[in-house]
Length: 500
Image (cartoon, rainbow, N blue to C red; front, top):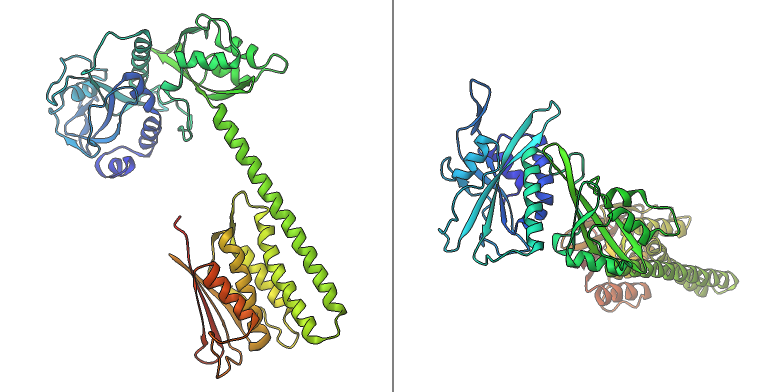
């Protein structure tokens, strides 16, 4: 399905500022749909459809295209199929044309029964106020209400409908979404989570049952209706400390902002929507959501992550201690074979320590393996014999890998590099990486090459046995070792990557 931006660019004459305004509108119009108990469809004039008459007034000479759609969570939907991308000719939808031509909200007309259920249609012109003070109309919102379950509305439903009417008027006046505010990108309270309606003085005129329950959990024992929300909330949450200024702004409904309050172990999220109709503030809506359990889980995850990072840090320290002890023991040995074996063990332990050190700084169990690979490569070059004097190079990027892959891969890479430096006597040594559905690592050198009778299956080399076990056993990958054309050796590690 094409995106809103695709449809606007391809089919309308709206500019970048208009598109930003529409993005802000559709990022937050779930609120209008839920308060209206209605479906919303945003129609934009097709390209070339809007023009100015000789008198300077805007006219509409063409059709419409549906560029966005929203269904309510508070009532039954009218449109079970997607309408986005649908084109309507001028005259086909009378209320849309009237709202555009007359720049007003249209509510006249009888219910439409063409779909088999009664549907009340309303249209709202979408206006963006420009810096020069002249409003620019961008399209029309069609609001469709399924009346099949109509009944005598409760006070909650009447409050919702009145609030929806005020928001619709703000859309028509270019006051919603709020200019200069960032679109809501995170989970904000919804209408069903809890709603308060405030008057101009910040007093509560209506409190939904869920909103009242949230304040009861904060410690409120009195009636909320008639109370000044900012003062009540401050008394509940800031009795012994300075009052949060954002709280007073949000709880009084003076600005479109969000905040959180905490009392008695309960955390409540507040979002204020000032209602500005006809140039004056008539009150505000405050959406409320109890986020106690959500914040508790977030804190538990943060504690768990910190614990895991501390464990990786301690494992790294312990491995470095083991490596230091092995290195000290190697210096005391007089048998060359024993000293060489211990030095190899030091390098193997060191490669694992590098992974754990990286994980101790990572917020998750994923690491940037390029940093680990570069440190492993540098470590291999540092311990190569003086007569070899080769600095391995990396070509390509490993990217981010889970720790379950990073640790055995670091060990395998250490063994392959060390084997090439010790037995290949190369002039050049490179690690070439390519990443797609699999991670392919090619380590090549231009040294003396493999023995004529070399066979990976029967090789008794401990290093190669370790590499084979790590690649094929732990990583479920493939290992191949073969002569390089022109001299030298090629070692290929092919490892499957988990689905993102």
